[in-house]
Amino acid sequence: MHTHAHPHAHSHGHAHGAGASERRIGWAAILTGGFMVAEFAGGIISGSLALIADAGHMLTDTAGLTLAWLGFRLARRPADWKRSYGYDRFGVLVAFANGLILFAIAGWIVVEAVHRFRVPSPVLGGVMLWVALAGLAINLVAFWLLSGNHDNLNMRAAALHVVGDLLGSVAAIAAAVVILATGWTPIDPILSVFVSLLILGSAARIVRDAGHILLQGTPIGLDPKEIAASIAESVPAVHDVHHVHAWSLSQERPIVTLHARVSDNGEAPERITAAIKAHLRERYGVGHATVELEFEHCADTGNARHGPAPRNRR
Image 1 (cartoon, helix red, strand yellow):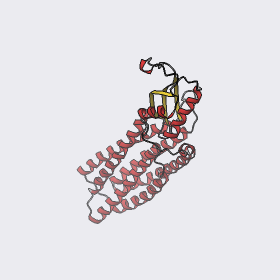
Image 2: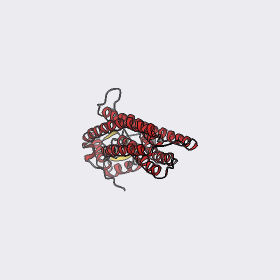
Image 3: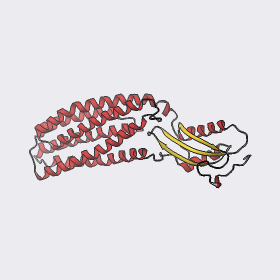
Image 4: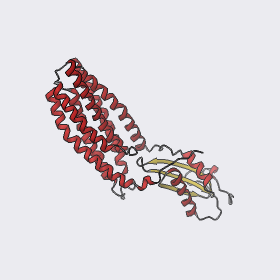
């Protein structure tokens, strides 16, 4: 039987961590948006596709970071009668949208690079180099602001946007150095395509992880069969566990529902329920579980194999 180590302080520090993440994303959005205008102007003046592509990337990044900030803001709102689970999944939805945006950005860069190969244009390497160096400094600060919380999908997507900008700045610097040293301008679109391919790989992982949560996929480390077996083994009154479903509102909030057939040995049902929930919380880190106790047939299926539990199991 496998064991799963879950940090119990994780949920306790969730609110504090979300507040810090919200502030960091807010500052990153301000820095990115502020420099985007300067980089776009530098790309137009120098004729550099790498700078223009990175400025376009920063435009969508500013929008993505703003959405991520809004996601944290909404996630703090309490549940209401229309949204009984609250707003935590809004952040996952933002991460999914940001991943799709990154696909569009990478595609646009590739199309523009092909055009630059066919119709080469002059590039002012000196202007390009200074603007790219300034962009690198800004992106390093933004990346530092967003690093450190990889458990939150919204933060991962936001950090990925900045990593794309960071790579774009490095590529622009490299292209500027080559152009200044050799005058070979095709290096500009070549490095732009290289950066776009790196962005695509990371964006695919974000879309995959966010899509898994939105489709209510089983979280990593929560195997329904193992959960059923461990409860039946660890809680004496439980005879059988079935209809186990595990999903998550966000990466930090896994949820489990299950049916438990229990022995009719006189033990109070609420004590059995409490024992099952404690087991889920301590072993699997599940803070929210819905448990339905059964003494006879399963109310949902009436299946005879879930028939009457024994009067005294032990």
